[in-house]
Amino acid sequence: MIAPSILTADFAHLADEVAAVDNADWLHVDVMDNHFVPNLTMGPVVVESLLKVAKVPMDCHLMITDPGRWAPGYAEAGAHNVTFHVEAAEDPAAVARDIRAAGGKAGLAIKPGTPLDPYLELLRDFDTLLVMSVEPGFGGQKFIPEVLSKVATIRKLVDSGELSILVEIDGGINADTIEAAAEAGVDCFVAGSAVYSAADPAAAIVKLREQAAAASPHLSL
Ligand code: DX5
Ligand code: ZN
Image 1 (cartoon, protein in one colour):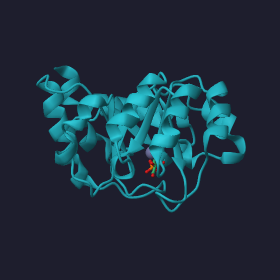
Image 2 (image 1 turned 60 degrees about the vertical axis):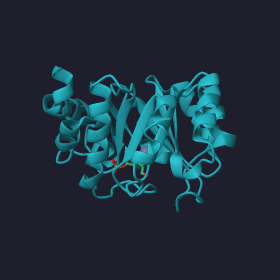
Image 3 (image 1 turned 135 degrees about the vertical axis):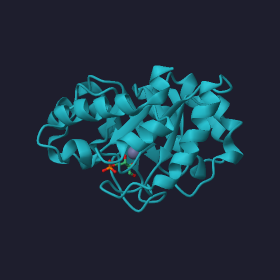
Image 4 (image 1 turned 180 degrees about the vertical axis):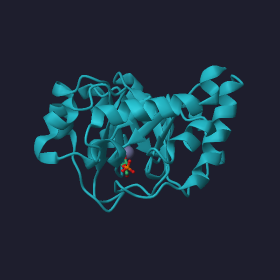
């Protein structure tokens, strides 16, 4: 799955930018509050408008403090998957329950420096794990390959039937990095600049999808 991130899109023409990627699997929308991360993007008002024009399921990535207060509202508004950061939540399992009760899939995001092991049990309460491969906050950063060991750990648990979760990666994914991520076992690839800096964003999605599929050992299992 390819999930283009509109963070690198032209914010003055968001509806057109969303339409340009309607061959994507998910539409990745980065919500930042200038508190959990040093950048500010959009909130529920803009997301609700985007939901009216988006033809593919929306994947909301909340880089905000106090996700328990805000995350369920995104699911209620119609977002398909709502992901928040484990570093920001006091009771992540409770937030996941509230997102699901509001009709969404629940996602847990972890920053590059956050270890996964303490949260393996917690993942049973989630539909998606978002492994950050850059520090959250900005598009166009360099991929951090060390995070792939976390992907490989989860892939093993999923393939052996011990865990059921979708593995997503976010940050620095492009034609040079997507194969390594696919080999490690990623299911869903977020790509911002690689899609929106391309002359033809829809064609960039097709290319990335082909590259990922060819390099994904778990797809041929
Ligand atoms: C960063 C965001 C990403 C970002 C990815 O905090 O979560 O979704 O848009 O952009 P690229 O693909 O350019 O690294
Ligand atoms: Zn993101």
